[in-house]
Structure formats: C-alpha cells, structure tokens
Length: 339
Image (tube, rainbow, N blue to C red; front, top):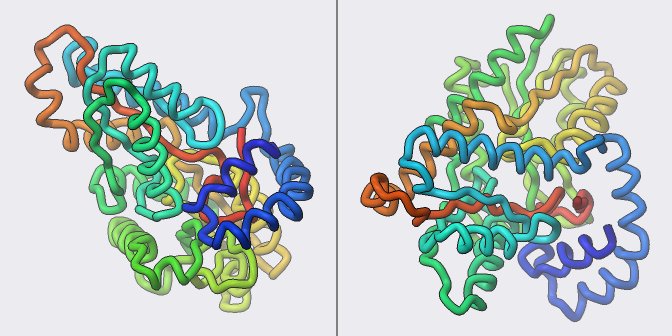
C-alpha cells in the first residue's frame, strides 16, 4: 500500500502542488500514516478475488473483448487492461498488445468525464511508456464519453431497474468524484461534463428538477472543491422532507473503494443518522452486457478507419487498452487506495 501511494501521490497530475512543498509532506506525514487508514477501509470491501476495482476491470476487459469479437473478424483486435500505479501495469498491457501484433493502439481511459488528474494522467503515462519502445505503435486516445448515447442509455436503464425494484426510490442523487475548484478555474472541463451527464440522465428518466440532485464526493483538505459536497447534501435531504434516496455514481466505470465503502457504507450511515429512512446505492455498470456493448460501439467508432480495412484479415492489427489508475487514483488524497 505504501509503495502504491508513493507512486500515486507523487504524480504531479494527481497532486498539483510544487514538488518542493509537497514531497516532504508526502514522505514525512502522509506515507507514514495513510496506508494504515486506507487498509482499514479496504477490509470492509475486500473479497476472495481481491480488490473490487482490479477484478471488475479485468472482467470488463473480457466482456469488451467478447463484444468486439462478435462484430469483427477473428483476431482483428486485442483488448488489454492496464493501471498506472499498480498491477496489471500499463506497460504490461502495452507489451501484450505488441506481442499480439497490434501496430495501432486505441487508449480508452475508464473515466467517462475528462479530468486532467485522471484522464490526463493516463495520457502522460501512455506517451511516456510508448516513447521508450524501439518501435512504438500508432496511438489514438478517447478523451471522454460523458455524452455518449449508449453509455447514458445503459446508465439510465440500470437506475430505472433499481428504482422500480425499490419499495421507496425517493430522491435521485447523482454523485461524481470531486476535484479542487482551482482546477476548473484553470480550464478543466470536468465539472461541465459531469453536469451534462447528470442532466442527460435526468431527462432519460423523466425526472423533474426537484426529483434529483448533483453532488461531488471525496473532498479532501482545506481548499475549496466542487460543490455541493455529497455527504453534506445527504445530511440535508431529510430536513427537506426527502427521507428516501437513491445514489448513483456515473463517473465510475466499475465499483471501487469510493463507491463500495465511501458511498454505499459511510454516506449511507450519514444519511440515516440525519433522519433518512431508506438509502440505496445503484452499482456501477461493471462488466454488464449493456456496458460492454456501449464501450464496444465507442471503440469501433474511434477506430473505424483502422478496423474496417483489416476486418477480413486474419492478423491482429489493432489494439485497445483500458487505461485507468488503480483503485482510488482520483484527484483526492483522502481516498487513495490500490491493489
């Protein structure tokens, strides 16, 4: 855990402070304490298969590979999953694609909404890794898919199914991972894309403005982050007469520490302690067929000019790498955890 946190929190994309100021704090204060705190959180969600983010990401890789195989000629494309700060390493994923014969690589960060601290970090690491190769592949990046129709449809269907099966679905809270306000002030499009995703979901679910809210979770430190804060809003809802809430986190492709522990456990307790009566968390899309189909369509659209000429060929000419930081690799030192 300490080794992971050292790699994660020393990335200037993740913690955007001057290195001379941050690194002494990291090694002198954060790393001696934080691994133990994160380990306690992980014990509550750990499974026989290990980190949920890791095994769910690998299962999604398999589901996407199967979805693409149904639409392409045999071996027309290969799919690998890579993480920036833990296993399976991004470099291992790129090496596997090259071994499969891929000369072109489409990088799909598993972050629907672009953020410099997450998607930007993926781009940095991929470019650095391929620059060291003797024969680097041609690269193409997917910046975001926050307004992709198939992704939104899959999310809306999962929310609708969950609310229909709930005895009292109540208010819908759409929660995204927070980032410092200063990042948005400097031009990061993350907040705008989160708002667009939330509005599109509410429209698909035919919800009136009073029936849903948007909030940002995982705030850390004294600096101002995007508001409203998820936990504070959950504590306010019962006083407004909203004693039942359904929470969904559209910014997470698969479930991880921030959804399974922070949202499903910690925030549930906060809502009930404030007078709430019914709390339900809608799981991430994970490796479900609608999610795999949506990502397959996204890949085919971005790589259409690569795949169509090779669809009749037998060799593996194109590759797709799921690139995402390890569990908790978000712009928030309060929830940094890894497999």
